[in-house]
Image (cartoon, rainbow, N blue to C red):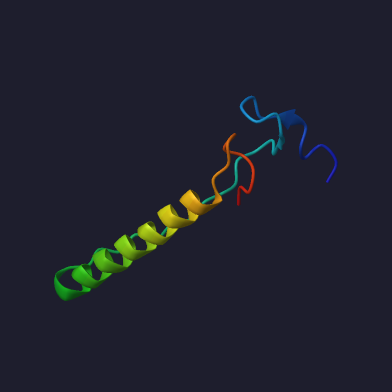
Length: 66
């Protein structure tokens, strides 16, 4: 699509979409044992992401970015 990327991000200098992406989120609350399982899963995932970031970081913070 012509004109889709007409401006540059001030921080990175990269071409950026004119409009931000749309986000749809569903929020569900849980209690009891299900809440404990969810908390454990979230902690595990956040730990994995933190480890990935540490392994894949660069001097400028942009190289190897996902």
